[in-house]
Image 1 (cartoon, helix red, strand yellow):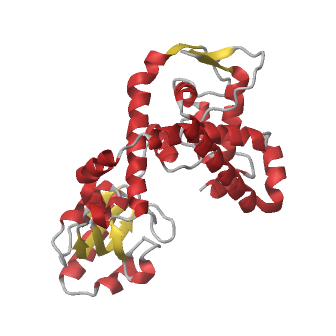
Image 2 (spheres, helix red, strand yellow; image 1 turned 60 degrees about the vertical axis):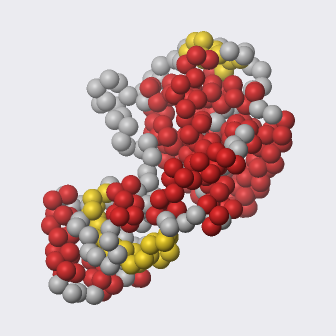
Image 3 (tube, rainbow, N blue to C red; image 1 turned 90 degrees about the vertical axis):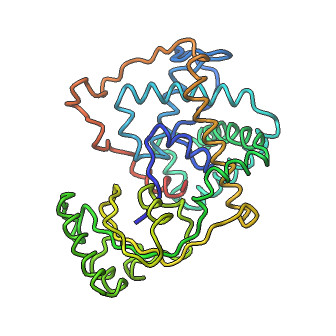
Length: 347
């Protein structure tokens, strides 16, 4: 089980770009066509054919998000954010474009390696070309690289000071009582909480934590280690779990801590704060990416509307109606058969 924080789709865009992964909301190629403009903005347009290609690539690289394309509000948001990427890419420096092309080349090479002999067929089934995907990626990476090059050392230090608790390293054990059991049977929150309290009572009574974790935990990632996560930065955990890891007195048994996964009983065995000088280069790059993420999100929220001149997006016949009877957005639509492999390669 991953304990990384799950983000909403609005924030997911920024997070994926900051991680230099395949963004599901990148702009597609800008080759001329005779289709009508679905978006007009200061300095350019996005045509119906361009946006259609954008959606094909989105489904290819991120099939888990394909369901949202049936929701009109989400589709319009994608188009607006595509405008943002087109606009920002057009303002990027030559150095940013050079770095973006280099990174896109690398990503394509990784995709080819992961898909192997199925690479060409996978593209054909999705009705996209390597050039389409490269252009798609290069646009997003150009924006990311341009913002990254503008991040100063002082900004990195300031961001670290504001979030330094996330870099605290802790060794801890936990027992997760999930909202589904080992047989994939759903539990109610009340049922999970009841079991979590029983686990805490046993631990308070002197039971061995590792043995209890192996017996009870629904966290498959730590079950065999007796619930242990060793020397891990607490910023990688969901907020509620992170707070407990940061504040729980050492070697005490927590009350049940509720997260989106269920209830956790936690014991922190050691905790060490980090100074900026102790950070790895990778961690410092991560801080830079976080700054880019925040800056991009701020642009999309505050500046984008002032750049867009018009949106003329046709209604989709497959879109959900206002009552949600066709597709509530909670059930995935069918994705291309090869897409999961492509997504795995992207990751």
